[in-house]
Image 1 (cartoon, rainbow, N blue to C red):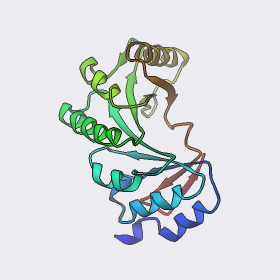
Image 2: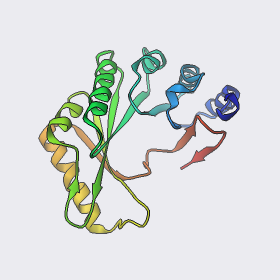
Image 3: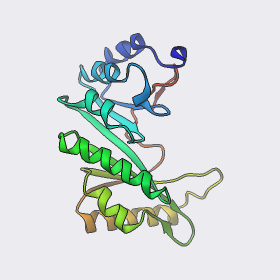
Image 4: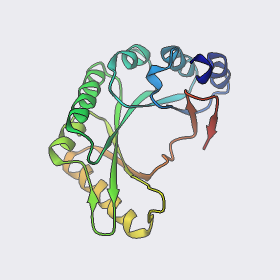
Length: 193
């Protein structure tokens, strides 16, 4: 339903404001009928555009980002997600990386009082081999503890990944502090962070 998507006119208005960082999310932003045009429009100014995607479809991402500067593709990998899904996302990121499109991984882990439930080492190694930066995010559930011990475990895990795999790792708790301006392509709502 076209009425549930943000309009291209609204995107053009946003682009005219020269916002430094724009995050495209949604459900899945690549299925918006004007996805490529949205990315091109936002990228025509000085905005850095982050596309948070499920990473399952390389074609619209390639079409939107190829040959453009200041576009980053970010795909989430969750602790415990199906191996076939992880493999498909890695394949998409590899295609993008081979075309010199910057790709990032958002590693979402579960932290409790005793441990960090993380992504299996074999999968983690493959993910980190195709990305230029990884974000390690604590999965926040309703009524969960976000105390100091959880943050320390999260930071220790991020440090471990950074040292072992020689990749830049940024730690934060969701929502991402990089979200200066989030544009949800499935609604007419704009979020300022």
